[in-house]
Image (cartoon, rainbow, N blue to C red; front, side, top):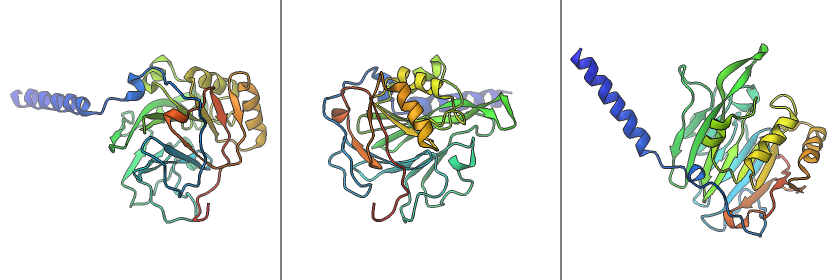
Length: 277
């Protein structure tokens, strides 16, 4: 009995120490960004980044984005196993399993960090990956049951937050409901948010519009759109509150000092990575 009590105390102490060792999220600690008046820059995913405070985001396909730092870290969101005709192996991939296009059961074994966004052994996914130049953490949300639209699967999706270059970048994943107050608080400030705007497979368009308005991100990157129709409906719905930048590019570079002065929806064109683009 004494041994059992001692083991419990040691486990609790280790868990507490582990939590205390985590890097404090500056996205939660700082309530508001102070964006400058310059605008974002666009560039190829292979080009060097200008400084340590700039992050490049490249829209690959569906809900996959490549995030790159000046030190060479590469993260891919909602990784489904294929990013294009390239040999690049990312350092980090995040995945959600609401649909097969958002994850793979056989990720490349050379990827150092594979972060699964669904429940693990009955417990919510809990990631806090500190790679120095980038911190990756998650906030779980529920998803609809595949066979019952009313029933929720607890903690079946993760909103992943990437903290790099002083920026807070959020990927909403396959979101099936609006976050509650506690989840919004756990997300903290998001300077850039990648939001699914398909209008039904995730949340409906009015709900997603409400979400991005509440998040008040400087940049919203639409994703998970399968036709220009759903994209146009979303853009029309946010046009009173957000500027619209219909770029023809697939990548953009952004830093705190180059965030737009007015919240802006930036439409990137999805394109699989190649050695040329």
